[in-house]
Image (cartoon, rainbow over all chains, first blue to last red; front, side, top):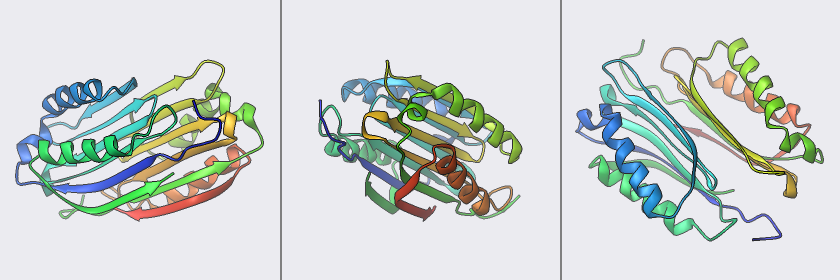
Length: 119
Length: 119
């Protein structure tokens, strides 16, 4: 463990996809994300999943390493998401980038408005 | 309701305080934040609160307007937090700034590494 604070990488982006159905299918993304979190050795501390009726969904997954959030807008064929992992227990910057790329691939999306913030 | 996507303001910052006890007291912050959310007319869609043993806490509150998250590090006298509200139903930028200032005041903190992202 570190004795001084180690900033983690917070990655924010908007994803654009023609697959509006995927932006409505909360359950499919939830299954995929849970498997990813486990495969990457991250620790889930709790999660919120909220489906809007016949529309998108919003989710926030709290990790002991920080959080992942997504807000989908199928009516606009986009979603905003962010991945924030602290580097307290291990260096996680590559994991952040891997997860962000994985989310883009899951939705077969291109990304815009990308911000990578060390915090 | 809008017929085109209206970017919302996502405010990210690190807060620094000498009040390490407040950074451990999850319940006090939870009570304050819930009251704020209600007073500001925001709609909670779910929440995760995780207390680390004898240490800080991590929380993510999903709103129909997006989310609020906080990760406290009493051992370093700081916390990272973010407030993201969409402008879909109404313009919420001032509410984002109000909430961010309120969080800083709650912890009697100064802020650093502030980012305001339209997304």
